[in-house]
Image (cartoon, rainbow, N blue to C red; front, side, top):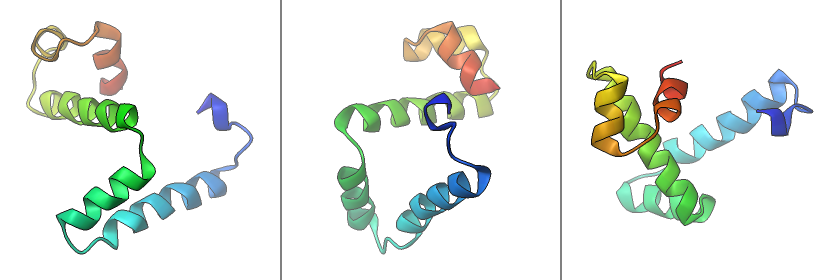
Length: 83
C-alpha cells in the first residue's frame, strides 16, 4: 500500500467497494470473465490466481514448506500471505 499512501481510509474503502460491487453485479460466469479481462492484465490475473491457490493451501493447514514445494513459490511469498 506504500504506493497509495496518499489515500485516506475512506478513499481506500470506496475504491475496494467499487471492485466488490463490479463483481457482485455480474449475472453469470461470462460477465465475471468480462470484468476480469477488462480490469486486469494477464500478469495480474496470474498473480491473483496464485495468491488464491496459496490461500486455499493455508486454509487446508498445509505447511509453508509444503506449499512452496507444491506451487513452486518462495517462502517469503507464502509467509506474506499467511500474515
